Picture 1 (cartoon, rainbow, N blue to C red):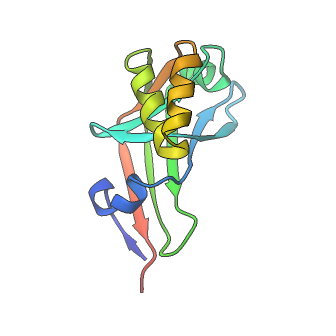
Picture 2: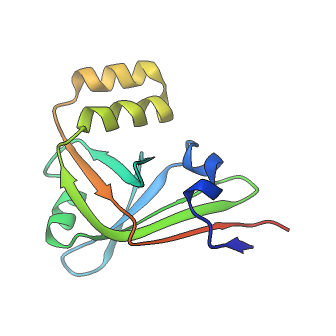
Length: 137
């Protein structure tokens, strides 16, 4: 297994359509895992959430420490993990929504979602610690 990889070493994964998983901390300190659409942009992970009341947002407001991981589901197996403190904002919500919806579900879905969703929240995770890997012979 090759380790110590960064986003530039994993272009198929970073630009692909594998769903990521965001880990946040519940009030009892247990972990909630949430499958998410995501993008790597400007050196970090962006994830949109459509409502301020979403549990992920509540968890991050209380404790911003999160982990995000995206492993692919077909060989050659590879993955990328980011750990750090998330920030929340409304900045570029529709941009993140459009780019990820188009990437994961196509342009028609992106147009529909951008035209029907109320403003939401962007979770931004700039890497504190990263870990990339690829299983190869």
